[in-house]
Image 1: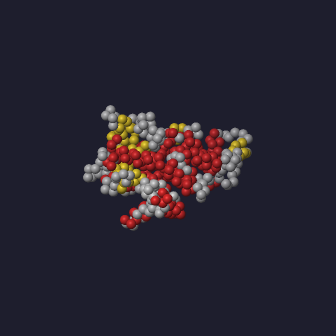
Image 2: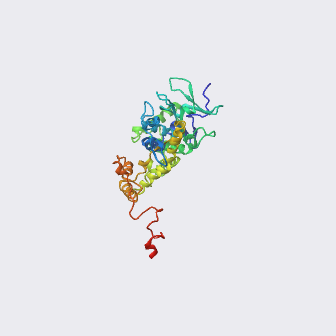
Image 3: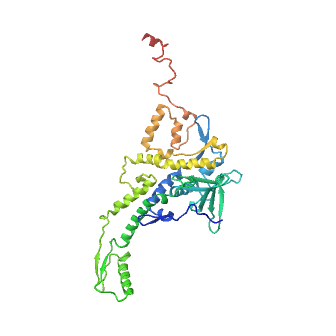
Length: 403
């Protein structure tokens, strides 16, 4: 059986800007790379943990669960947890899907390692006649052929929009090829502009004809070589009565910088990325950066984090563990304000009774101080709403009756 390219990889498509947009060249644009870094960086550093559900709303880290070390510390033999999550999130951001082969542990537990697979190697995903979803994955060179894995052997994280069968994500360069193509065309224009000495070209007027076509090409090559690279600002000699008329197109007249900036904003919008996260600070101030950072976590990172958490819970938790355990990122560190703001918030929570000393220490990644740190305060002018004894509304209160 030959690979059935149900889902073409690294083919791409031409854009109206004249740039062929594909996996390879699309990811070379500075704003695309910046958005991938802005997503992968935070997610790769967040604690990713297995929690156990306890009575009521309580929970605790399930450090003894076989998955805990795989997700939190060592996903496989060659990668750290940070490296693994960084790589997978870049795949997810650009291809809108990320794959890992689930390999059993040496003691027989079904999930012992997560071996990442580049999406370009997954050339087919289809549902079999038995109802299971299967993955056809090309082997790495120099090996040839492919392997087929069942869905319970693959961690597959997806992000909408999906293919029509709902089994795969659709890559960004396919859904937003025009936006990326225009951004690449702007970059190409700028590169060629400066490569040609910042000139817009010109016209060479010859009073007659060159003797041969070879003489004409030789003259043009000599002229062009004399005006590019290290020679771009040197004097040049015109021969054979040739006159040069320059076509100057200044970058400010063509609004090149504004066009480049606007292209960056449009690329960032593909991932709902705040401009300040990719180095565009024109609309940012010291007063709103903190609020924008919180919005980045809530509105930009949250959907990606949810995709990770729910895919991991679906593909990695087995049997009854799905009811007893859950998998979650700890994003508290990303939501923290500056030191003064945090202290003010902690003081309010402590005084009004919903934070203990140990709660505050944990939020600051500090060790608790023991049982005495678990005491919650209650303001002296506050009491249980269900307790009516001694209140003015209590008909049995003598002072109330005298009143």
